Amino acid sequence: MNAKLYLKDRRVKCLVCWNLCEIEDGDRGYCGVRVNRGGKLETLSYGNLSAVESRPIEIKPFYHFLPGSTSITFSTYSCNLSCPWCQNWHISKTFFKSKLIPPEKIIEMAVERGDRSTCASLNEPTLLFEYLLDLFPIARRKNLLNTIVSNGYMTPKCLKMLISAGLDAMNIDIKGNDAVYKMISEGKSKYIWRNARFAFKKGVHVEMVFLQSPPVYRNPEIVDEVIESHLRYLGSDVPLHFTRYFPAYLSKEPPTPVDFMEESAEKARSMGIHFVYIGNLPHKLESTFCPRCGRILIRRRGVRVLENNLLGGKCRCGMEIYGVFEDV
Image 1 (cartoon, rainbow, N blue to C red):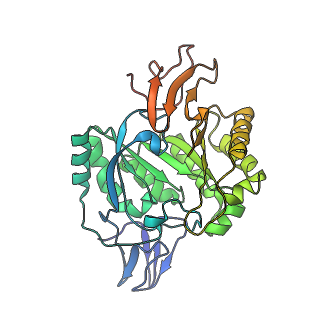
Image 2 (cartoon, rainbow, N blue to C red):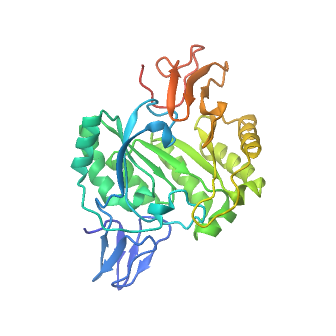
Image 3 (cartoon, one colour):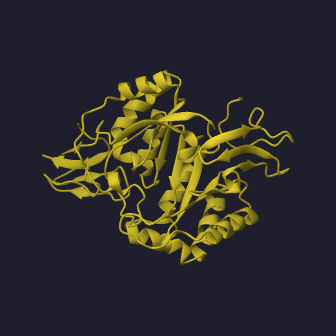
């Protein structure tokens, strides 16, 4: 299928992500799913899905977006970054040709299963860029909301097009500071923060996820930089999830120490972030607390919502809570 968002010359220049690949005729870009064929860029990933299933929205994690609901979740193959600790390496470091699943079929499945949203996830969703541009409007017509779980490394133009097509929520994985991004790409952390802020300002629901990988837990100053950037670009109300790293793919380093995660979370709270979570392990900070009165608002155990005390998106003390909520 013909790709969108590229410049044509003897080589083609892909404009979907910050790799900005210049691709010779017959070659593929860094992600492996975009190929130059006679001066035209084509995508190999349209509808080429590695997984489709209904999953709890909390597993993304989205904690302030339709809590307790399920989302039709789908992915393709490959990635545009090179994280040696990738937790989903079995699909992000491979590419297979699968049977095309049209976007209409995904929406049909979502409606049948009672899902409230769509979610491109598991590997980097912008590799399904053209597919999402087609799928989002179909979902909207069926009263479904649209979400992605992304590394945030897309270009501003790509993000604008996704928002125009009907993107409602983004979960963005911030890897660390510029030193970490130098390990996995040629980009900078500011690209991700600027995209997060742009989406937030455009009314897209945003939650940030910070995997505390070995480069992070061995360099605690990176946590300070991430918290400061979060407050500068997004403010106090956007949730920040600290998630635990486990050995995967090329990384054999031990899991993130729990006390390091707890210190990171406490630092974020003390510096002014209202909604701070710890994930990938059982913890009291799986639940949502009112930053004004301390009352428990949403009690969770893993990906299960055990109790939801929000009333019209507000705490009983009257504080309005950032998010997209439905009365239960």
